[in-house]
Amino acid sequence: MVRPYAVKGKKRKTREEKYDRDEEEAAEQVEEPSKPAMGDENETQGKEGEQFELEGIPIAPTTDQNPKSGPGVIFILEKASLEIGKVGKTEQLLNSDDHANFLKKKGKNPAHYRPDILHQALLMVLDSPINKAGRLRCVYVKTEDGKLIEIKPYVRIPRTFKRFSGVMLQLLQKLSISAVGKREKLMRMIKNPVTQYLPVNSRKVGLSYSSEKLVSIQKYVAAAENNTDLVFVVGAMAHGKVETDYTDDFVSICSYPLSAAYCITMICQALAGKWNIL
Image (cartoon, one colour):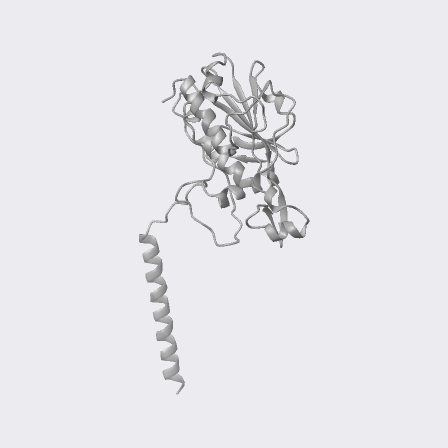
């Protein structure tokens, strides 16, 4: 009786070994797909609640071979909502959609936690023809709690908000993010004040719906000197107004309140017309 059982066990082991070999041969024939860079349009989504391990962000090429030629523009996004909170056992970038109950328990207004406003604004300025032509010098982000972030113009910001939140969380934790496969820091925390990083002869313009000086942005930028860099200060918050002490002018570009992303779009279109960027 022992012998037949031994034969059956041996045959079963043989079938398992053959199955393993078939799987290994099939895996060798199929080329392993390359992992997409963070921020790609067809990027792989993780499971719900999974923490993304981000090693770097890609660089978006510019069409201008000499981006420093001619005047340029700098954007400063003030009062951006970038705050980390420990939700459960993990640290997350707080936002009004996913953490409304958490924020209410902490006695905070969820309407003030809108990092998506910064995400939309960055997409607009970094995807603009101004940036692709090499005229965007830099983007600075001033958070609600006073932190200052420098973002290079050739950074490719992730398209989805979930990925963007992962990038900002990593930036706030590690203080900088480098390019994929390189040591160059594309996003980093820097010391205040922001004025020490601005060109000496630049014209600094603050934008707010509450300003009594209503101007046509096309005429406003057309009247600016051709050899002067322009600095635009735009609010990246849901409520309130920008109050700075370093702006040379404080204007409103529309009779109606606009989002930060649309304000940036209007400015970029006006600058494209001034610099003949088609």
